[in-house]
Length: 214
Ligand code: ADP
Ligand code: MG
Image (cartoon, rainbow, N blue to C red):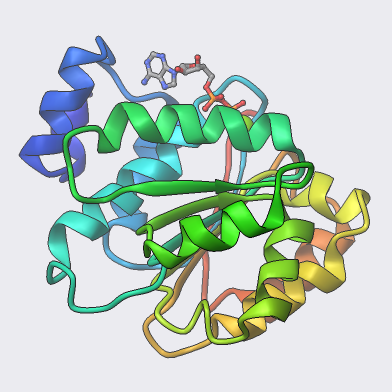
């Protein structure tokens, strides 16, 4: 099984080749074909199994397939529990969006708020953020997620453990419209808080659970 068997755009296959990513991991193999059809996903697999590309590749594909610049505002938001994780996801995004018009902004706590406001005014297509700071930006400009097409929750269980439920719900609500696709990743799907929020946020999700035994 190679990345080319997953239905990904040629431009993404070329990037993966340059990055020397040859074969998809199990979570990538399972999640990508579903995600590129536009379906919601609720997935778990262990740390280090390649979840980042499992959501960034479908997100990039969605950018390639949608009309260029038909809308302003972010089209894809990735939420992560910590600044450090947001930075890692952002670095991985950069390996994929370099040389494309699909630019990104990193919106995390501990950085200057007004600098971020300016950056968001440039209408980045991707925003990688921590929930607290993104919710602060929604307070500042409530319409800012009106054009969102894809909402990705990375490490949803940890975001809930860190007390971000209200912010997640607020962001989800601000981004709610018919065309939105939501993907949720978690280390485990046994966490009842994850299942509760998933049942509120996801629309008939494809449930994927990798490597937790039979
Ligand atoms: P997770 O989010 O599941 O903990 P990551 O997305 O951070 O995992 O990926 C872990 C590591 O594996 C990263 O260094 C990443 O670059 C690498 N990786 C991801 N996908 C592949 C792949 N298909 N082939 C080889 N390495 C990969
Ligand atoms: Mg991860």
